[in-house]
View (spheres, rainbow, N blue to C red):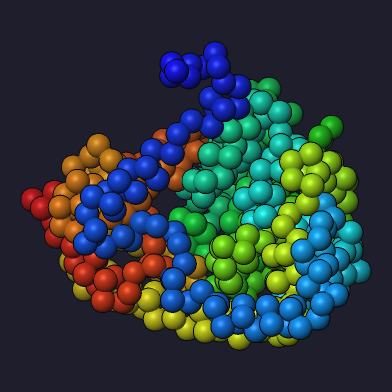
Length: 427
């Protein structure tokens, strides 16, 4: 059978393209089993909640009625008791009442992981050629989602505190001047411990982003898509109310959450709180795709929350990751601190450390550092993959490091290897 051509595929299949970074990293890992991977954004295998899940499963199987219900079809919107608990937890974390946030359980949607909801919202509000403003850098999987939808990801400046509101204003002014403002449909922000930078957006910027979106909405509303996938992974400092908490009308912010990082990615339970006018359209899209997310997983997470097992697990996970974060930052101080032009962000949570090298060092797959790092025994994600294709120049000297998977001794070894590779490239 002949190979497929573009004429054999839909436009969206062609827009999706391939995943070169994932393929290269997987190939390198298989070819070099002794490599320390500071690349994969996975969670620590040892933290997966085997015992906690067993306790919840025992509770499900001990109740025949619940056990049978868990194995039946569910609703497209998701299991009501789980949705109610998710809303209660968000309100408690934000220190708000449902009335203050103008929100109800009817706006809570459960999906098979948060990426499904990000895709569904995009598919609901975006036509090909529509624009989403994203931080430069941003979560590269979401950038792929936008490409798959034929949308344009336009980068705006982000710093150690995340997306810069003034940069968003500047981007909107440029779009207005180019006659493209009506194509702007959303502003995307990872509000807690960003992937890739680890930055957390302060409250003042959260309120500013909502105000900007409301003020510039015209015939079509500009949404703020808030990705909260890492909110529970807080190791230092105080929590910050969600971006949604600064939208008392509830008509602008789409909040997306997940249990993948805080509990188990294999369970595949994500969720979101949508503006009322988006609930019906999103569910129509979802119903045509999957007829509802896996009901068994929803019953499992409902039981975990109902039995008060989740928070204890998160405390254990955070303690382990806090130690790993200390390890990677200490190793950076020891091995990278003396190299001129190298700096990094010190996050208060999440799974990532963002590294900036001197301007002349190309960290990409075809640059000199990546193969040298592999020779020295370490993998990283080139930062260029985290930048939207429009809006600002893509720097070649950035690296995303992830400390979730390796042990502390491997983290130290990987950072020492990375420092050797950088010094050899500079030398």
